[in-house]
Length: 394
Image 1: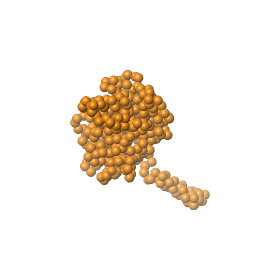
Image 2: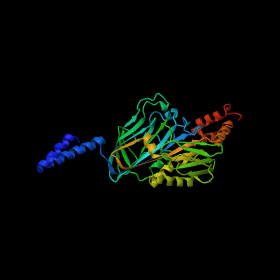
Image 3: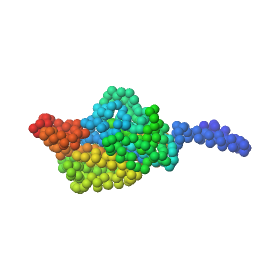
Image 4: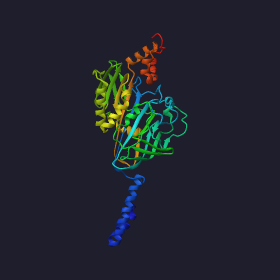
């Protein structure tokens, strides 16, 4: 409050009861103006609104353990046709970056109808797919450079006028064949209605995907003894790490604790099943703040992908890092916001290298297909170790 105005208000206070009431009103108005100035004039909060989000950050570790640039040899064929794209569905294959951000979904829980606006930005990245239709996606024009590290500004997406309708049944779009997209709807979250220029769209969540050139807060590489050396490259503790390996029908995994600085993980010795690991992972997600049905929906969505052929480090992304590289703004401000992202760091092991080399040499398309998404960085590693390798007679 202006010091001179404060003096006048106090002088009026001592002058009489009528003027005193005027001074109180004036003081309240000034204080309110200060609060609105700090909040940009928007509603301060909606204490009854709860927002939960989950998603996956996928990367491939290079020879030094850090995430390398890569492009997947697959497009977005796993998404239904009603999902919207920054460009054509195959555009994402052209983007060179370190991270694929896969299927973040935002759930809204409210006891009453309300309207919210949502904005998400992605550091050194682009938002490439989403649903329902967004009110603004940046950049909106043609992307001329596929090198995400050279983007002039961070990409972002915004939904305005999202209607949270807990007392209405939603009629959500569905297109055959069934895909893992729909598993995310199996929660008690409030249905959403989003007005667009082509009519109202309905969904159980806000969905988006993207790609980025950001540096992850973790690295992992095998030492000479076959142990996985995990290093925390950030300032926050990595809450949980899981070393997973699948070769055909053989599944092994080892759950490690938090990593504050570095840790050494022995090769998985526990012969388990995908079902037991799914149960363990759901428990970890609930401990991080998701509701049980949300954790179940997340694991159901990514069960096939997370636990496919190969070796990988699965970890919980530190919340501070997530909020820094993927800032989320919701108006009005929810009473509670929980964001739980699972990191997936592919480890190109000697077993993976040999499996791919043998499959290519013998034209075994079935085996090659198991690694198809990560073939580019796997082949790069093979050439680093064996520059003369040409895919034949090896």
